[in-house]
Length: 297
Ligand code: MF3
Ligand code: CO
Ligand code: CO
Image (cartoon, rainbow, N blue to C red; front, side, top):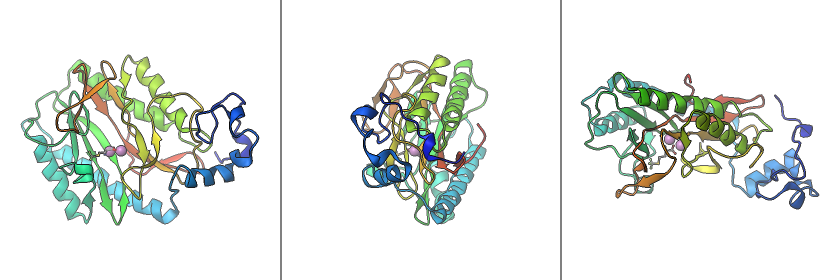
């Protein structure tokens, strides 16, 4: 659906679409800035959102294809008995062989080329000596940099045949991403995405991690805007064609709270329950969205 000016209908008491968090009537109601053309300028200057042109989109899409091929290659090699560090070596070597650079390596001091998060690990697991066991769930999060462009994608795999809890959390996380993506179209807001994810995941008796969010991506690893996986309908900035961001809900079987381990990176569930995640890099198009890292959900 094409964005028409009339389609941004904001009530006086709704959150202001400029993203201030204040009510529309107390903020931009009397100003000209909620007109689409002006909003796009505000998002660029005030919120530092970097809109992507068609050559940028081509670059991110090509990078995304490499990222997906990397995940396929990992999946072929996954079996009980291998260490998470073996996954790191596979990802690192494959990325380099394809003329790309692994973005995680040395990113803010991260020591490895991929995040590998097993069972109760929510995200940012550092590859090491942990040995994968039958029934484990393992998230592999890859971000190559190819010709200066970043694409960020992850999947949670199951080693062998899953127990009931593992099967449930992986399915709910997968469908949570699908629910979030289904909200992406011009004129909807960032808050609509989080709202749809939270409603779905909590409806299944699971919880949504709040400390980590999706993010703009493409020219850099983490750009504006932030994309929370919880929230209220209509909240936050309005989506425009040319925005590229990830949606990457982390869903816990138990409570949503987390702990960060001594290594300062590994996020684990506070209650030790299982956590799963799926991530794609999404482009807002004139009619809806295109995943630049597409796989079935
Ligand atoms: N790929 C992660 C994300 O989805 C970020 C990992 S940061 C790292 O945003 F340093 F741990 F690699
Ligand atoms: Co990401
Ligand atoms: Co990622």
